Image 1 (cartoon, rainbow, N blue to C red):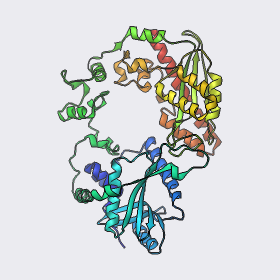
Image 2: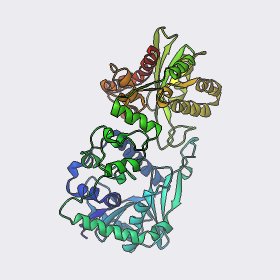
Image 3: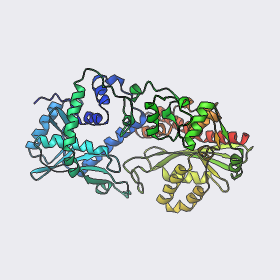
Image 4: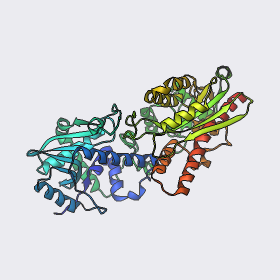
Length: 492
C-alpha cells in the first residue's frame, strides 16, 4: 500500500481557516513562528488528556507508534488489526483521495465502529465540527461503517475525591448527525485545498480576522510583518471589525485615525494619548482612592497552575491552584517595607501549607492590595471552599482586598506610555521606568507556571535551586512593583 497524501486532518483544518496558511505550511515551513510557552503547555495538556482517555477503553492497541513518520506502515497495521478482530484501536490511520486522518479512538460495535475524538477543552467548540467531519468523510469512504462519532471532552463540573473517576471526568458528545450534514462542505473544501497546493505562487490573501480565528495562525509573524508598532490593531477596546475596517481604508497607524472616527471612551483615551501625548491625572479620584486605604497595607500576589486533570482532592479541571505567593507589608506611607512569601515544594498538594503560611503572614487590620483583584479573590474563594476549617479566615482576607488596578482601569491615571493598557506590565514602565520585568529570568505568569511544572520533573539539585530562585524573584518583583506604583500615585 502506498500513500502520497496531500492533506492530513491538521492541514485540512488549516485550509478551512486560511488557504494561504496551508500553502506556506507546505512550501515554506521555515517562515512559521516558533511555538511559545503557552502553546507548548497546550500541547502537553492535550497529550496528557489523550493518554488518560484511553483508560476508558481497556486492551486497546496503538497503531501509529514509533519515532519515524511512516503512514504507509500505519495504514497496513490498521487494516491488519481490524482484520484480526482487535476491539479497540488507538491512533488508527486511514487514507482516501489523498487525505490522511488519524482517529484518536476506534471501538468495535458489533459489525460497526464507534469513533472518538479526544479534546482537552471543557465544551464542544465550533472548530471541532470540521475536525470530526473530515475524519468521518475519510472513514466512511474507506469502507468503515460507523455507528457513532463522538467528542470526548473534559467535564468541568467534576470534583476529584480519591482516585480519578474517568467516567465522571469525561463527557461524551455525539457529533454524528452534524458531521453527516457537513459531508458536501467537506468534499468542497478538500478540492479547494488541493487546488491551492497545486498553485505555483503563494495565494494573494491579505490579513483578516481569520488570522487568529478560531486559532492564532503560526504564520502571523510573516503575514503581518508590514504592520508597524502603534497600529490600529493595538487600539484598546476597539472592535476587531472596526480595526480591519480602518485597515481596508488604508489607515494603519493610530496617529492617522480620522478625527471624526467614532471611538468609545477607552479607545479615545488611547488614540488621543498616541496622537497628542495627552495624559489623564484625575487628582480628586486619585485622592479619594488613597484616602480609602487602611494601613498597614499588604501587597499580595499569587502564582498558580491550572491542570486539566484535577491532581488533588477537592479540585476541578482547570482550577487555579496556588503554589506561591509574595507579600510586601507597609505600616504607613512613610513606614518601612518588609517582605515575606511562600513557595511550595514540588509534587505535593501546595494548598494547606500555603494557607498556613498566608494566615501567619497577614494580620488584621489593614487592606490587602492586589493587581486585578478578581483573580486573588477567586483563589481565596476556591481555597475556602476546599478547606472549610479555614474558610472564615480566608473569607476575611478576601473581604479586605483592594484592586490597585482600579485607578488605571477607570482612567483616573493614564499616560501615553501605557499604550492603552492598564496591565501592570504596561503601567510599571510608564510610572517607574527604573524597574523592569525584562531583567528577570521569569517575567510573566505562563513562564512561572511552566517553571513550577519543571520543578516536578527536574532531578538536578542545582537546576532545581535555580528555578526556585527565579520563581522567588519574579513573584517578589510583582508585589514590589505594586508598592512602587502606589508610591508614584502618592507622590502626585
